[in-house]
Image 1: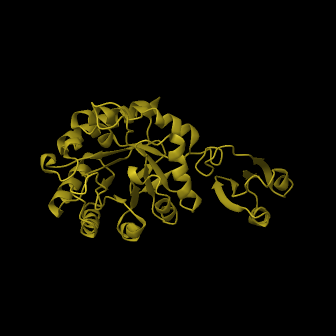
Image 2: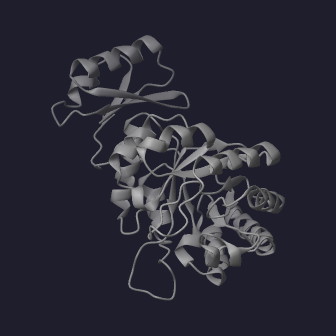
Image 3: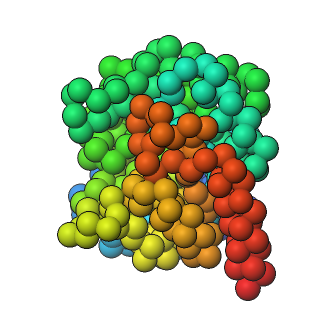
Length: 336
């Protein structure tokens, strides 16, 4: 349920409505937007009615929210959420690109790649310090040493850092080093991790589970937002299907569908969807044409030697060309 206040209502009247909501045993969530404030009513379990609040001074209307997800829905917030990190803004119609290697391997590697992607126009650097791998014998990441190297990248290039957190136990240290905390595909429904992310003041990049429906994905975002963190970027990275010509199937249709239902920005990860370098470029161009709020692309200076996902990583010169093309495509779409 959503209580919409009248325009420019004074703080005293807003607090009176919050007090009335909490007196009913519900949680009140303040949702400021322009010159009008709305108040979300959570955990009411159908025990309260719109009439309980319609008569309160300063209340314009009360809206019933039918969706199982509340805070992430367009019903709660019609306007797009804008999330600013460094020079990048997600959700405002621009198309910032996140780029970097799948895994942090050594200092020379990350610094070289970071300088390349920044020169090409990337706004944020990605790199995994903790790596969730299908095989226990695969490279698992450098851990804290990797985070230290990512901090050095930020210091030398000025690029904000996004890196993945795997569990609640390591959340504190990842949060300390990262500018954006990524929750990966395999952890999309790790509810303890989602709740911890909800208490963070860092933006959260939430990847879609490999077999998750759109509703399940939005409900995962709701777990984060319900705990207080409103800075969530959704990331489509392909879903598991029966095909064998690519690693996963990039669900382009989920972008307009998610935008219709939710105010959260959504970006595309063509690298994990494709799994093969020659497909990444085409999928990245599709993301720019689709109206996504950005892209995340894997780049490696020596992908044939990469310790993780080298086959899907672009060479720096390929990424430079991709950036020019994506920028041109996005400019055409933006005009329309």
